[in-house]
Length: 230
Length: 247
Image (cartoon, rainbow over all chains, first blue to last red; front, top):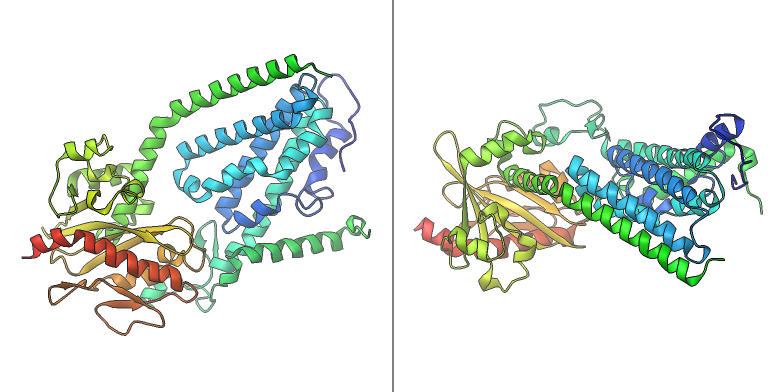
């Protein structure tokens, strides 16, 4: 865990420690495949790559800014109510994301609506505030937020890729394999690999569980030191 | 350790600042939200007649959708007796816009049936024929489903449908919205048999009638039954108006 207090240094530098803050959550300390956090949203929003990308951007935004504000206020937040304060910070940022998305991309907002709100309960974000931002300076906290947000987003996109490709034969909504809806109405229009029947299971939630499970296995097979044999 | 007084002060100041920021943002963005919502429901309305439009309404520019609405569509609001009502009645029902597009059907279906208002959209095709778009709303497996049904000018033949849902299962119930080859079956079906309103039946296991039935969806029987029920009841609401027009 990257919960060790980073040595207090003055000024903004980018050395080995800072790089580790950014890259550790991408693989060796990935929030989803290693810490197994944030699984519920990884199940819910990975039916398509577009949804996963919007969700990833939203989580990076919330993770970075909530880490920053919590770290900025870390010496003035009363310890008795620190959880409540963290929740208020997260909830405020999530509401800002929701209002912005509703104004910018209404279709995505309609598809994601309830899951954007559920970022509030995403354990990755609160976990980082408790474990890191409360004990570190704003600059390091921002890096930690970027690292964890992106580490979460990458897994989301990988899962969404498999689910959308095999479940609908599409990537970012563009038809790649299997019969298109026009083909089913009029068979004279040709499609590439028209024989591929979309696997409906991949669109349903259980498939995300399988894909994440396989990812966790592959990740540990690739990096055996992550295997936890307790 | 912080004293109780400082904890309370901190929380109060924080709450006040956060509330101020969010309230400001909410009212600042509200006009854009309203515009987006209105455009979204216009696109949904038009998707019932997408085969008569130059391109799919979902991919259309916002301006083009609004143009079609102002130039080619006449908006009518009906009461449950099939009579057209004035804009003032719609306004007093809580929709300041006073037009069919302003009616919030999610709110409307909670009223007693006899008080509900029905939106109706009349689309004039280039060849002078008219299409009528009706609105229906019902229950799927998990939550509400709704849709637009477009009728040809004979008020009998279906020109197109567009369904939507709140929470049906992707790949199963959600096919009512996503699967074009399924909802395209409705085109050309008829709702009247010998002057009796019959509606269209979604038949599990495959349609047994060419004119009044369509195939069900495997794995989505309850959603499909919901569509049958929604069409039957929804069209029944419009029956007084349909009959006054047909005779």
